[in-house]
Image (cartoon, rainbow, N blue to C red; front, side, top):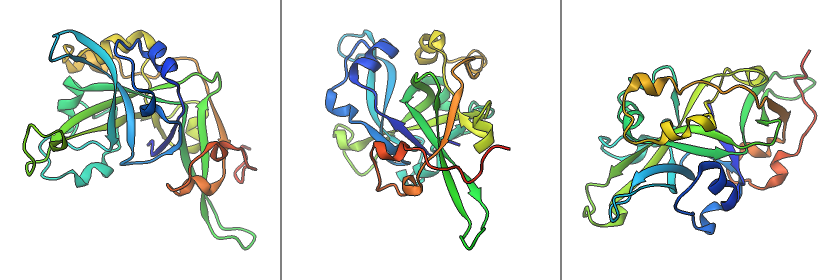
Length: 248
């Protein structure tokens, strides 16, 4: 799964990476080193502008944890931070968004945890690891988004609408498999156009895009357990610490 990630990209980084036609506001991109479920996140989407009718590519703020449009309340979103690539096209919570509302979620890297057994008088605990492309490139994580309307608020009130997102995961490869059996699925740059195209709704065609691109091996490093608390943030969370579970 992917339960925490890092995003420190500048506006210019994302304009260039995603080919944005509507530049995002600078304040929407404050660097964050410990993004957690239900936090606001930024995602690239491609939608038709209601006023001009033109197809635009832009960044939108969303809450991490997808809430299906048919949900009675938004409380279950925290349980839907990830969608499995193998079943995303058929699960009731995700299949509608998979067909019509796909996005790209930028990340520098992400965290996973591995159990460390009790030893030398120390209790068992979970050691966090930070995984990121060795090349320093950004991860373009495959995401889905959905709109949920609060029935207790007038429809024309902006507060009536909640936009939420989920990250698609796949089987872990390379070094990532050492820490966890799942990893975020990334979309190749050559597939951005198709993935974001709202007119592409054929699940068979879309599933062909759900593959892990070659290259950009992930580097794995152990980091402080400070990242375990969602209250902690800052670049210090990425500092490497001795690995209690060295590769043998």
